[in-house]
Length: 250
Image (tube, rainbow, N blue to C red):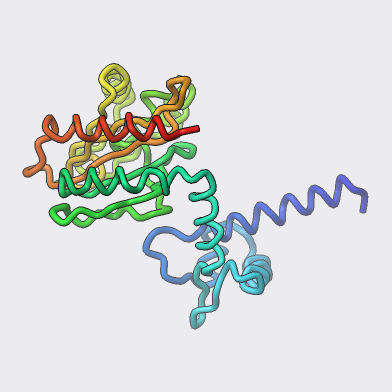
């Protein structure tokens, strides 16, 4: 086998390993090999063989007849999140925002067409939310996602729209034109709102964390009950926190 063929084979294997790990979704405590094969579209024999290798490396763990994500993945993920020190630097400000609003505070970044939550500080008066640290959510259905997209290059928005705007909550924006108009306003004001677009009964207010060029690197938000939170009252606090975090970026 020549070098090019070896590289190609290694690339395929790496892609399949990544597909197996990515097959796990929120709420999946464990998955059987048959389900992993179904979700990834690979033969069951291949899924079984590769799963065995992942277990040997600690990236997956045996759980009865199935497997679950291993603690080694958590350790690697923590290194990725904390590598720049941004989350550690942001945490005191997120805690202050939670104390000021008594609602749940999120810090998130955009990856592809989804937001990934870097940190979450739960509020005592806030509703239970499906978000989790390391979890993903469609960007168009979140305030943090809209805050980032509105302050990103135009191709970012086009990619989100091209991927489709699936309905997530009772009031998710699924019309491209309406989303474009809303994001134009977000870009002008620096504040994004999400009213029951991801979860029924929940209101979110977000603001982007900008680098020195003015591009969004992340976003911070508060989430609370839509019938209790007055968006216009909490928006200045969210905006102030985002501006403060922007100054912590290298």
